[in-house]
Length: 141
Image (cartoon, rainbow, N blue to C red; front, side, top):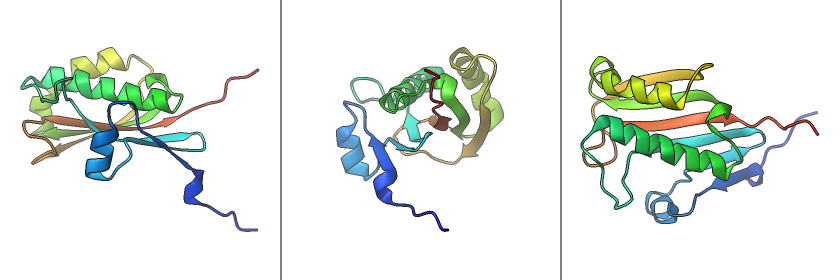
């Protein structure tokens, strides 16, 4: 027997305040399918819509945005199984400010992590973009 799959199985996760960006860029900030949540790359954007120059602050804001998307799907950072980070420039230089922030948000046990150095990101002045995959485990009754 072949299992069938439908896009109706997807639940789009669009936290309050991100509706305009979702429409402008044609994306869902997150997508839940079964017990998995896939979070699109989040930039570190301040409440006024600007990207601060400080990489550590961008990281905090991007991780806060990640938290909001996960919450929309019923998850927390503890449910993250794969963290994906994209760093403008070399990993060694950006990890100087990123690793302390990451380790504050993700204490042990740590999720799997893939970090990639890139030439550019999708926001003026953006130094980091953070996405994730989370698995929501049903709590026993």
